[in-house]
Length: 153
Image 1 (cartoon, rainbow, N blue to C red):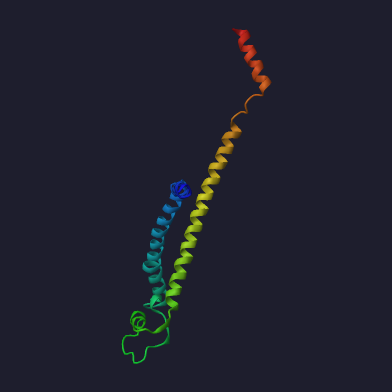
Image 2 (image 1 turned 180 degrees about the vertical axis):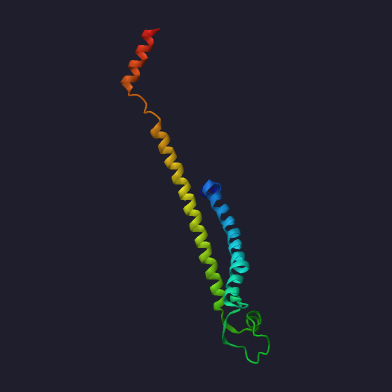
């Protein structure tokens, strides 16, 4: 019974450590940030690409039918064919997700670069402040000053 209690206590200490909480917050913010990147790709970048290419380009609906269901008569859209049981190679969806990944990686790179730059600035500032402060006097000098101050009294 004491092993189980020790295990539970160890788990509790692990779960409430600052690192674990920081990780949970990071995952939650990362998920929300992923939604922002999805929206950026879907609502801003893809329409610009569509405009540049001169037409309605919806990469999520670009696919190749590898095997159509027998006797299927219906719309040739990804959703309809997928629901009908067709085997599809949806390369457009892959391109969209790849663009999402590249943008997300780029934004994370920029954030890490900014944080490292800020840390470096703070570190340099601390070094300048430490260099500007005079070093403490040697022990014998401090002792002589104390003696001098006592003799003055």
